[in-house]
Length: 392
Image (cartoon, rainbow, N blue to C red; front, side, top):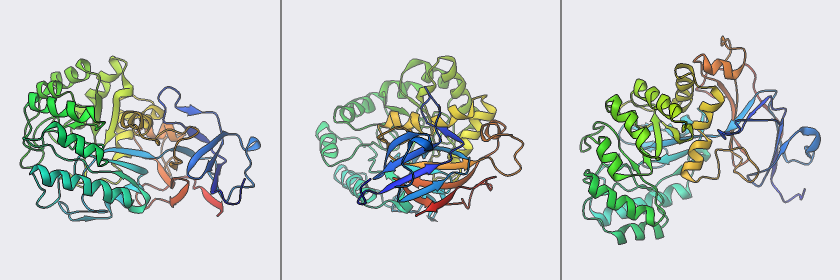
């Protein structure tokens, strides 16, 4: 290895979870990272550990991809004014979240609703979070809330400026299915992904978006299918799962029973790959630094879902649906990892069993782009065994 190359080795891995629903458990104990990307996955005897500039000993614990929160509402760096919350992104990093997807910067005081203003704000947000990663977390932002009067050229301009997302359809003045359908199609034409608000109103100015509107709009992601906060009736939730092929997003700040219903329906129709997880924070339900971990534990323990599959919903499923280069442990992907172990005194004998019993794992380290960002989490229960940095 060249001395100019930034290399990391994570060795002595007890359990390696890929994030890929088709092959969630990998047979390997070592990962080689080069310049922020995964270079090699295998066994220590076959990898040049000695030449790495940084060596992390996982101490026989579990390595997963960095968790992805598919639904957040950032505003300015690591501050959100609606809850006057500072450092919520860094707290989420301590909960294993290494990537966040904006569903709209809707909590900006005085959020512009005129077309020129909303485009300018979206572009500014995209630039700001592209230039600045709070605590190293990748925040994909700049998600305009669409308003009546927008035309195709507006979406073309947004895409050319680097905007890749729409904020939740339905949070602005566009609430009718036929209006949303046209704008969602324009966005898709120019490579912009869309999410639609689902369920009852969440904040003043939003409204009910029922299954008929969701199906007619045909957005790429059925945002918080379990409500944000109020869920649709059961028959509408099952209809949404069965009647389209779009992403089924289940969030922490929603109706938990409805979330389990969506999970069961996705399993019955054999489309678990459509299920992705978010928190929908910061919002009225507060900031949930462990929200994604809690969703993994809830869906696994109450939804009878193997823990390794639940972790895929918070990693690889989202990465594939959102076209991200992280979320899966595979050669060429971003080296974003969480090193975790079962919590001390959990009734589960293994980390997977402990999650399936409803416990949260303890996080010992987070790594983003091959750089150690946090060590022992200040937010999770203490892990039984902690990884160590043996060379840095």
